[in-house]
Amino acid sequence: MGAEVEVKDEESITKLSTKSRFRYNSPLVQVSLIGLVCFCCPGMFNALSGMGGGGQVDPTATNNANTALYTTFAVFGILGGGIYNILGPHLTLAAGCSTYVLYAGSLLYYNQQPHQGFVIVAGALLGIGAGLLWACEGAIMTSYPPPNRKGTYISLFWSIFNMGGVIGGLVPFILNYHRNEAASVNDATYIGFMCFMSAGTLLSFAILPPNRVVRDDGTRCTDVKYSSVSKEATEVLQLFTNWKMLLIVPAAWASNFFYTYQFNNVNAVLFNLRTRGLNNVFYWGAQMLGSIGIGYILDFSFQSRRMRGFVGISVVALLGTAIWGGGLANQLPYSHDLPQSKKLDFKDSSFAGPFVLYFSYGLLDAMFQSMVYWVIGALADDSQTLSRYSGFYKGVQSAGAAVAWQVDTHKVPFLSQLIVNWSLTTISYPLLVLLVMLAVKDDNKTEDEIVNEAPVPSSNKDINSTAIST
Image (cartoon, rainbow, N blue to C red; front, top):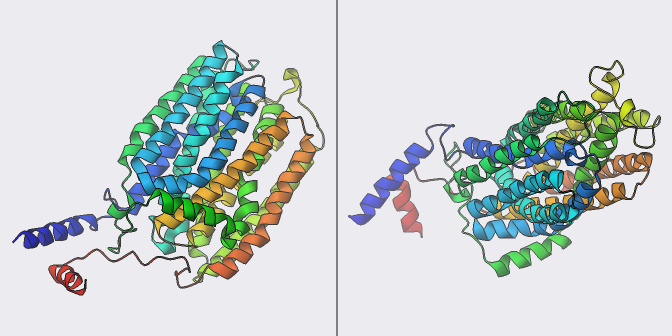
């Protein structure tokens, strides 16, 4: 009798769980929710960083904080996948999101008491939290969607996430509109960022674990139970000898390395305060357009998944070469910071050219990172493996960023920074092509795939036959 009740309960849950694409336990809703969490936390952080120097006149404190941030991020990005597999999404995300609030609060404190200590410590803690958040996000974004629509879901996430940068760019632009000669943002700007980040922390509790998410075809994302510390330690160490991850290293290193140059040496050097905020609205808006465009190419351009990968990488490579070439032309006339009186305002006649370049940098960033995430998602389908792969990617990415912030702190010439960034992205393209050629298959089956996506039973007959077979 009890077994019959259990069968009926499971059958009713199944009927509810697959009847709508907009149901709470669908991949669409869950990827949208993780997008909103990242909208509120790293999206606002991106807007803050995009102003150059965290909105401060002297970028030294934030450069040192970012070095601490990305150093701890490099470690916990790699460990984050294992931690997610042990703790699950709720604790992992909530712990990660809370550190963003602390970091914004440290800059509010620095506005009143200009001592670097608190900002640097908050940056180091944010690196730990960001490692947890992005490993969790990577697992959700690459494992929850159906295999043939991962590019679409990645672009959906990227669009929602970068709307945070758009809104976050409006905050300093509006609050500092009449302070076109001001060098540092006001306290209200930091308080506004803290409110968004706090909301993201609360929203993280709405994310479902992978074994409760059901795709439209009735398959679960994964039935794998949460792992153990010893197993995850072993799996994480093996990533450093995994040839697939080694081929991703140059792309991962490059993918945040260029932020320092673009934020500090283009946006902060060429434009005044209020214009920097306006630029960020379009920089992160361009990311939304870029992710949608590359997502379409990676999902719909050809029937063959490998061919879609080759075409996507080629498109990004050609566009990236053109944009970095434009960056070189823009960089040659200046080699150091400009006096405040010579910084561009959005009302100036010479504003258009540098603005279009900065917009294009945002477009390229989204296309480049969405492309890499698509490749990672094509290597496996289960959330445990993809959480480790995503964590490794974010860890290497953050190690590159830590180096980049110190490169800028030590006043390396702007032109040298540009050449290094261009070279790193260029090297990554043929390696990604090789990875797609060797590891991505056209039948949506990868060699890392774990057979754990059994369809959710839709009738008593299915459940009974499963019970008999086991």
